[in-house]
Amino acid sequence: MTELPAGGLAGHPLRGGPEGARGGPGRTHRGRHRRLVEDARLRLLDLISSGALQPGDRLGTERELAARLSVSRSTLRQVLAVLAQAGTVRRVPGRAGGTFVAHTKVDRDLSVIVGLPEYLRRQGFVAGTQVLSATITGATEFTAAQLAVPAGSLVLDIVRIRLADGIPISLERVQLPAEIFPGLLELPLGGSIYELLDEQYGFRPEDVVEHLEVVDASAEEASLLGISAGTPLLAITRTSSTADGTPFEFSQDLFRADRTRVTFRTKADRAQIVRRAASERVADLRPPPAPEP
Image 1: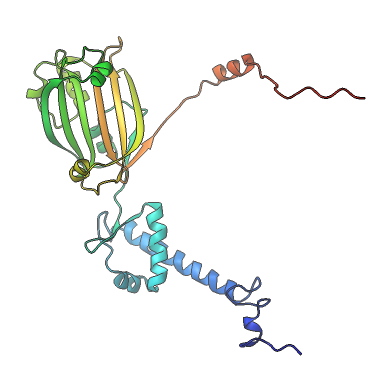
Image 2 (image 1 turned 30 degrees about the vertical axis):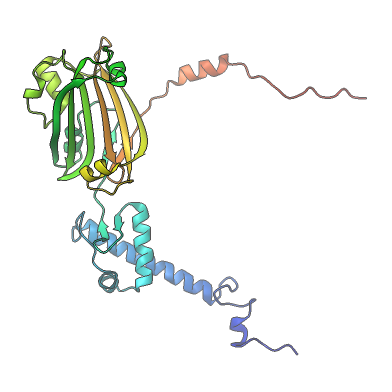
């Protein structure tokens, strides 16, 4: 007669246990644990949504937070992992780190031509600017090509840090033909460049081409934006032109990826798509069937 393993049928691979059959104790335990994690997640979200925990607040130690939510520290770690993946909290390693309530992301809508301060105001942020430099320099070949001017032509070169609720979100560099905008550097440069160019010179962007890519922050860029070197940044390059096709602005913006969401809006011309599809001829590259014997 075959002897039962120690612990009886509960430890047998055909019965319940951590890897037992459906409906066994192991499955019940896993379901109960998932409910604990979900309940703790919802309680923590309630603390954030009610304002008891504000963006940027440190959540405290694992021991304190686990006691506050009445869960074990292992359960708490799973809760924080889920919230970190969703972008609700931010986990910073190291002695001075911890888990913090994440700030709301700025929505950068590339389908709307408006200055960043206006974007921020519409989304409820307090906009701020630090002007790092404002100089006149010679255009590089690349900048000259974007602005349709000879290489070496004088351009206004403005470098600024943009702030949302006092926190840096982007580092931007704007270059403009100096000949078109005399005296611009003597004006206040803390607001929207677009508004300034419209009010003072009558220039308004009508055609804007933007390119988006992801880059790693250099040590200098990271220091200015208050992040670690190598942190991902959203790099947006932009060329703006007037209604008659005259380019007048070339900008290179670096947005913190942890604080920015990019929105694209596209209207498809379905009639054109249908016409194109109907006019295209599809080539059948399959070999012809072999003749029947």
